[in-house]
Amino acid sequence: MLTRIPKTELEKGMYVEAVECSQTVFGKRRFVLKSDSDFNAILNSPADFVLINTAIGSTGGAAAGVTSGAGKPLTPAEAKSAFGRSTGIVKAELVTMLSDGVLDMEKFSPVIEEITEADDAQFALMHEVSRLRTKDESTFQHSLSVGMLMGRLGDAVGLDKETVELLVLSGLLHDVGKLAIPSKILLKDGPLSPAERKVIRTHPRRGHTILKTYDNIPDLALEICLHHHELLDGTGYPMQLSGSEISLLVRISTVCDVFDALTSSRVYKRGWATVDALNWLFERDSQFDRKLVLRLGGLVDA
Image (tube, rainbow, N blue to C red; front, side, top):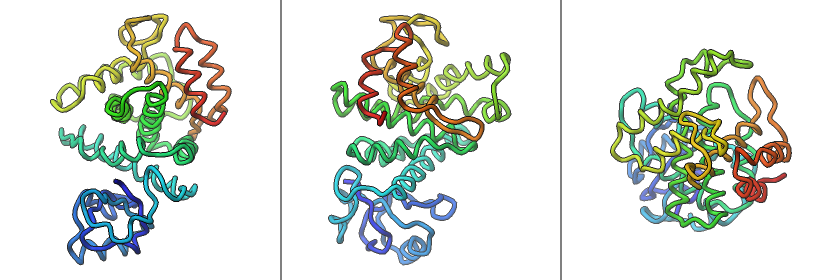
């Protein structure tokens, strides 16, 4: 079980999944804490909390800590820290994928477990934090938020745990193609020109091409990466699929992706109110699955 503990409660023998600070300060992850140097480095880091795995290492007094699924509720500050740490993991792995051609799927495990085990209150706090975006981190924050929403919606419609976890992973990976888009377009302040919009619309195919080079990418992640902008009426892209050609799991990704984009505040725009975004999606039933929009509305605070 993943458990968040104050760094002051850390003990040797514990299995450290992540330290809640920048990887440039302490980048080591997923290891049994044995050395004095690692122990002191964590204590001297700016992190307040450490994520440990009690199923692998020793627990010490961790049973009373804040777990990812139950226990003491997260405070807003803790939720912000957790979201920031998870964003850092997503960013590190996606950037490494593009720059070094290496993808370690196990690195996503703590993020997926934290999302799937979160209770309603923790999800609500994390979702609220996720709506505030910084310009340079927006792609990674969006991917994490969409993964959170997809997992929650998949669980709400009765999908099994394995499929829910695959949905979360697919959400984390769905926009990897955007990292191949020129920064002057991706990070532009303000509306895109028609030519720039055309370039942006290439990101599903770019992402699909990138992910296909890895043998360990699940088929569902490939499907969602390629088709998360398809619409039920056939006006989406890149293949103009329609109706029954679009699977339930892809429909989940589409609803969550658009909802998150509408409600997120960025440097150059204010996010829509939740109720306005849900109404906008609901009124476009020729494009989005109304049943999924209704289910999503029951999960987020309108």
